[in-house]
Length: 314
Image 1 (tube, rainbow, N blue to C red):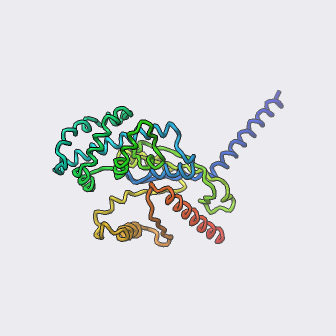
Image 2: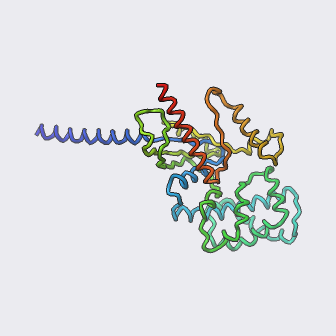
Image 3: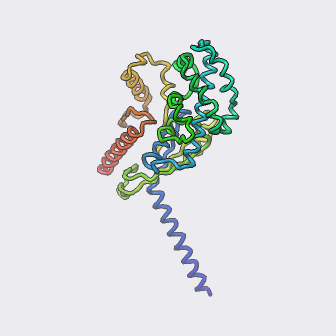
């Protein structure tokens, strides 16, 4: 009987050791990345790009339906903001008769939008929204968006209202990238990515699949207290910035792309603490999938070169 119990204990011990060994193998190939940044700095859009490039490539049917409702909400919310701003800025209507339709949009409360907008409701007001967007007063208000808070992506949706209001509308990947939804709490997304040697470790095969865990946290001030609980066992932190925050002291030509690019690079360059470390920069936009793909490859190659250099010095 003693021998029987001992054999069972040995089997249990071996099973536990195998499980621990497998978990250690998973952890060795796991890279945990924390995305940090203010609201609308592009964190969630970056995650969407990772899903397109390194995940399934497409969003699930349930996700697409959820994004459709969110796009309806984005459109109505943005038009409410523009109508309110036009009134406060005292910008006269191009066609004054349009003013009588303002209540049709302003009747939607924040609570209504949070509950979700169904297709029937959206179709009923879609022509009114299109009519407003065609008015020079709303276009002029949008041009003054530096004076109030509104998502830049709303222009994309207003320009595609005919398609969005169709009964068979299903958001494309591009639509989803433009769709804005504030992150609440902490969201974790996992992708398997090949040949990304984040650690300079000769014992780790750089050709094996890496398990990337991206931690996306809410960027609004009320959400930032939750950041601290995410810092445990982080491999890398990726800060994201909303460049609109940096233009208060920009003195160059706002219409000159090179002026803007040099200004932004200088902002990041002057804020660096460790001058000995190399500084790389890429000009990109979070909604350009192919551009993000190229940047990711460039970053991968840079990491590989740095790690090979470190291994040779060991």
